[in-house]
Amino acid sequence: MTKYLISFPSEAIVFPEEDRQAVSDAAHAVVREAKDAGVWVFAGRINESVPPVMVDGNGTVTEGTYPPAKRLEGGYTVLEVPTREAALEWAAKIAAACRCAQEVRAFQYDPSL
Image 1 (tube, one colour):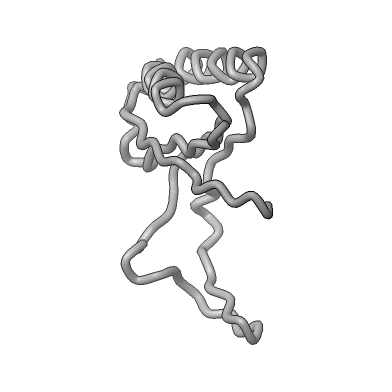
Image 2 (image 1 turned 90 degrees about the vertical axis):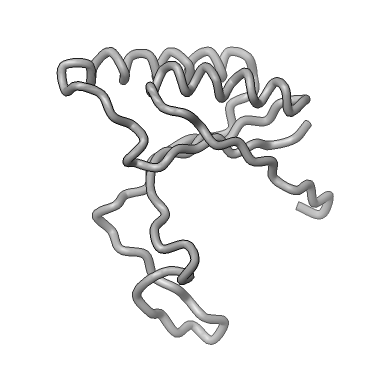
């Protein structure tokens, strides 16, 4: 089975404040469904109040991120499913719950990990 990253940037999730609880409830329902289906790996949100740093091979720490990345934020879910089609189905469920489109990417398999 392949692990898929399903994600969205913070600015993509836009809804009226009065819908916050409904969106939260819907997202938690999808999480429960994924756990019950045995495809859940993990999920989380980048803490945007903590600035990113780069750590070099010699341990040197510098503020910032890779220039092309500019920002890494938003929400992330990792699921392990048998097919890309299954990943797209789960992404649609997450998109409906969060009220924003989701990006889907497959992790490259490495048998040594």
